[in-house]
Image 1 (cartoon, helix red, strand yellow):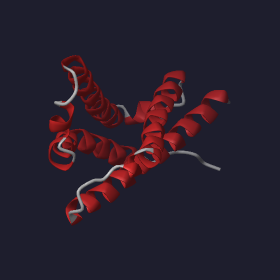
Image 2 (image 1 turned 90 degrees about the horizontal axis):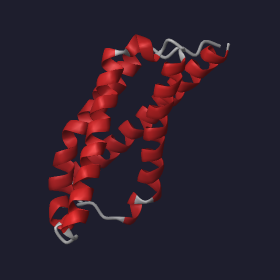
Image 3 (image 1 turned 180 degrees about the vertical axis):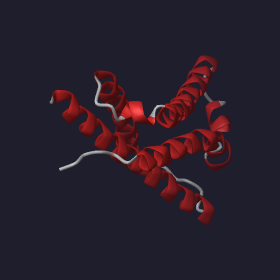
Image 4 (image 1 turned 90 degrees about the vertical axis):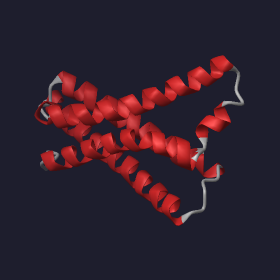
Length: 145
C-alpha cells in the first residue's frame, strides 16, 4: 500500500490553516465578544488570555506557511519530517478533541452564518488532523524502514 500524501492536499490544508489564523480575530470579536468577556478578568489574566490567543493564531499561520514552503520536506521521511508532522498532527488532533469535548457546552450566536461557520471550521480542523496524521504515519513508516 502506498502511503504518499498528495502535495495538493498538504497545500490545501496549509491554505486552510492560514485562513483560520486570518479569521481568528473576527471570530473572537464578532462571534464570541471575547474582549468584553476577558475585561472581567484581573489585568494579568487578561494579558495571559490575549497571549494564548496570539499563540494559537501564530501557530495556525506558521504551520500553514511551513506546509506551503516546505511541502516536499514534510514528506521526505526524515527524522525532522516525522517530528514536525507529528507535532502538527498532535496539535490539530488536540484541537479537535477539545472542540468536541468542551465547546458544545457553550452557546454561539444562532445566526445562520455563524452556524455555517461552525460547521466549516470544524470540518477544517478535522481535515487538518487527518491530513497530518496520514503524513505523520507515512513519514514514520518510511523512517523506520
